[in-house]
Amino acid sequence: MEIKSYIQENRDRFLEELFSLIRIPSISSQTEHKGDMLKCAERWKELILEAGADKVEIMPTEGNPVVYGEKIINKDYPTVLVYGHYDVMPVDPIDEWKTNPFEPVVKDEHIWARGADDDKGQSFMQAKAFEYMVKSGNLKCNVKFMLEGEEEIGSGALYGFCEKNKELLQADVILVSDTSMIAKDVPSITAGLRGLGYIEVKVTGPKADLHSGLYGGAVANPINILCKMIAQLQDEDNRCTVPDFYKEVIELSKEERELMNKAPFSEADYLNTTGSPSLHGEKGFTTIERTGIRPSFDVCGIWGGYTGEGAKTVIPSTAHAKISFRLVPDQDFNVITERVAKHIEAIAPECVKVEVTPLHGGYAYVSPMDLPAYRAAEAAMQKTYGKQPIPTRSGGSIPIVAGFERILGIKSILMGFGLGSDAIHSPNENYPLQQFFNGIESITYFYEEFAKLMQK
Image (tube, rainbow, N blue to C red; front, side):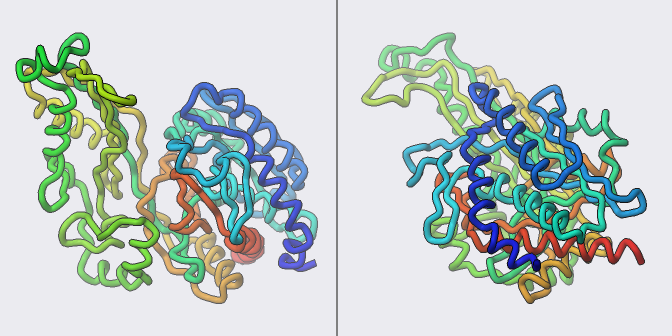
């Protein structure tokens, strides 16, 4: 049976199996969901075994467990290590969801739920493609699965897991479906990811909240101070003002930038997807360049004082902000984090105390386009979509991908099928059914093409 027929025949089963994963609220950043992490790992174990793996284990780490599975057919066959993650982002603000985030709904040919795309839907495509290849007898690759539960909080425990299990995880390539395409009719392969640094800033003024009438104007307000400090971190051209922030950034040539900007881009579609009234970013660069080859600096959250209903006139004792900075090749997230922290501390006035806490980070990654696995991904997507996929650089980050190369010595191929309109990390996350099914189809072709190329 051809893959298209197999998908059509098993469509309802595929969706219900995926929904069984989505219904588990595996939010890694919230301790109350610790039990859900193990429950989701156990469900993944069942599904990978049912798909045809010879063995699957739930392996402990210093954090959430890793689901490891394998099917070793022939030691002379190439080996593909499939990576994905079963943890998801929090659902806040919950009142902006149109459906229950953990009760998946199919509407308008989309799956609506947290994790529909990132990364349960995309990881599950890998399991179903593997299932087809096993049952059809066409699998000419050894396949290993590694599904972690901490990607959304930096994959902290996975680095140690990889160090301890180098031999177990050896493969010719790591296959990842956790990225997006340019558009539903414009296939693309992510050839690069930005790195990431993430910190929390705490500004402390008085030892306790104070009456804003009795003390207002006489002591520093931490929220006011924090806002002023944040405003100093970018200039009028939207460049980060931290000293040496751009020191290691590689400047692409005019020809390289022109080639990058040949990728299809519609400003109207981009604004429609984001809901923003206009484009905004570092002066002198296009939107494609801003998210692909330039670092960025963003406040992800800010809080302090009283935010409940009605009025409470206080000068708060503390104010907080969470700040992320996306990085490009040659920028070491440890070095940049230290520079950012020192600068924030340097611009703080004496009337407050400032603490900067690094939370997590990772390096940027670039995938060479002359790898057999990259060529296999190209051929596979062309077979599904009827078009040559375009190489792109994603503005997002998967920090562990660079870690794989450093620890295991293995390159990764980022073969994702998400779309910009999928609202990952946001309310009303969704995933088009066609992308889900196209992903399954394309991954089966990848195995066929990769096996051929590796035999030559």
